[in-house]
Length: 505
Ligand code: HEM
Image (cartoon, rainbow, N blue to C red):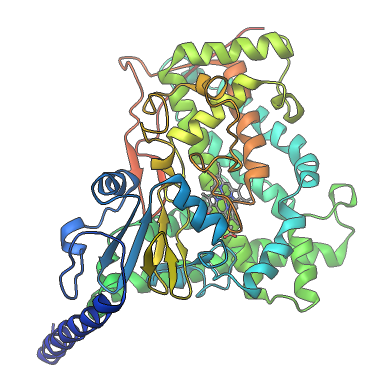
């Protein structure tokens, strides 16, 4: 570090301290801010609460500070909402006011400062992107068009696991098969393409780049430079790496998928019985001048992250819970045998006739919420929540995991008990009809992918439980279900090895 830089840093720090004190004096007099720990200049509450603002730590703070509290993380205001009435206020009643998204220094890079759909502010661009994406991705017609493909992909997983003699003895990492399946499920929709095997070089590159993007974006290690702008120079290397990954990844989407599809479209009639795949619809919007090529690439980026990982994590959590609760696994198998007949391979329409399967999925999404804090919301302008002032551009986290895990609201919430959704919670759906249970959010910024995610979960979990008895590897009683949280993600820390003993029909 050179001397001039240190001098600048000290002057900057001093100016920021004075500025922060002045601002907090002016603000404190005028505004009624939500409760929270007392902040110190510059750092706010960062030194007190640390980096790992995961759903459990935030739930512990809610018990102390109440249903809404404020954390000052350096320059950023973070408002945490932890009760169903206030979740309703943020996501529904004041859905427009709180319907924007914050980004941080890293998400700015990965989304081209909001040229995508998921991380853009509430307004014309978001409305246009959501409209353009709806027909190709988020309708029942899409489900019906692609469900035979999803059923075929689940069948490939079953066949490949059956063909591996280790699966029935020492066990296999099912996630590896399921990951390929999820890529294929979504790449069929996007590009009418699939990857033959886990060793396909293009699949390996894509998976590595998506993995790196997630690691870089979900990590807490860049918080300091995001919260405290004068420390940002120390983040230069990290941000440079983010830019490299972003550029390489978008180039891969363009060279190997987008341009290939354009070439195909210009040389022969579209495949798939003349049916268009999603990117054909998106390219039409580009041709009409509604969006530009960057927007097209960011749509592909959004689907790679929002659709593939979240669904994969949920399948992985569901299987882990079923392995750790063999009686629930058997009950699910019995239901499918009884309703569908032994050996009949479950299809999408069957999933609607299997209430216990639906309950297992809902319980997985409750206890092991893939996005436990939703994707952060934001108010563009000064707003009011409960009796408090919320300064413009605050990051609003709805602790959806806590809403669904609060013992004051749920019976024995820490248990994995699908029966609750057939008994005391039988009216609760995953679509947000109850503000205690929001695995996909609710309202304007809720997850449009729910329409695809639920059938894929049903087909995949159903097929695996129909065809195998799943158990922990030899010498282990249970699978390790330690959680790994990120900025707003939650997945299983260790990808489990699972013994899959084929059933004989
Ligand atoms: C089990 C799987 C999934 C879960 C748990 C999940 C959950 C969520 C959640 C919690 C949000 C944020 C809601 C909010 O901020 O209020 C979200 C947003 C979103 N999800 Fe999903 N999702 C899943 C699968 C999918 C799939 C399959 C797709 C696409 C095919 C998808 C596309 C999106 C998009 C585009 C958004 C952003 C919506 C917006 O900002 O307007 N998701 N998802």
